[in-house]
Length: 417
Image (cartoon, rainbow, N blue to C red):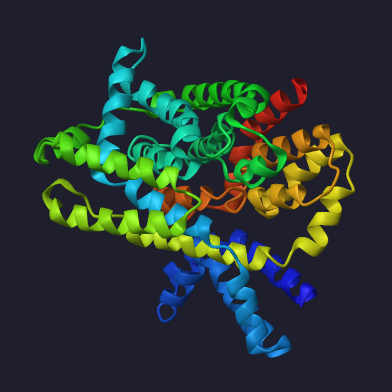
């Protein structure tokens, strides 16, 4: 079963790289466009192959073992990402953050549109250290979509902006011990609190976020223009009551606070759904479909990734600190940085230098692929419509993320504690 699971995991990885090809075929096919479009949905990939794994397991080792394995997995993270995406993307939360970004942008000595993009790529990822990375990804993607990811921008520059967004989100959550999934996996085991994270990783990450955001904003600045249509749409909407906005923000904070307790944050989410229905005139359609697809993707990764420990952990435990950094950087791209650091937390007697290198490599490489960091599928779901054929090329994402990844890696390596 270990070999079969590894093979299926490899097929799923290949499928993610081929997703855009399925989208192209879907546009050409007359009879099977629906199936090809489904296969082209990146968010469906790991859930699909996880289903194949469970069916295969039922045939090989018996249905009861397959059910027991499925139920032994922990699905808190997929549930949390789904809930936080939907709440963060609600109109009251989004308008509040947009208003703050607009206020700061007007105070900056550059064009407003340029300032807004820079703030979305720099400030919002760093705020992810407080509101969690999935929430930061959702807000940044929704604000950047009309500004950057549209037909007026060359495709390669869109991938450059996407790569910076993904990398900055991955490293921007390291100022605290609870916001980034790979940090959360080891914080309690290694006794890493928020003060330690800010002093050891956070300030380096903040510098890298600033450099990456500034560089890509300069690259795309001439293509940026204020959108009159946005102002027109906003003028047609009912003014947002303060009480409605406050309830949404309190709900967001409560979900973040109870992120490890799915029973509680799901109860909060159900109340949130009822509240949005009660105050429907002040709401936009909730992104339930996008959130469910992302949750399905992450749940599939949990099921498939749970059977990769037999070959991943020996690699992690057998490397010297510097080699471990580059090993983590590479392995993160083909697995998940939270899964990687979790495996590291299981290794007895790991040195402080090795712990630092594992975490640094894991977060630095978190923007290279869709599966490298838990919030990335959310970004793909919300931004893919702005790319050619309505799909994001994995090769294009890798190319766009290489430079910002190198900046983050350099800072983590130069300033080793």
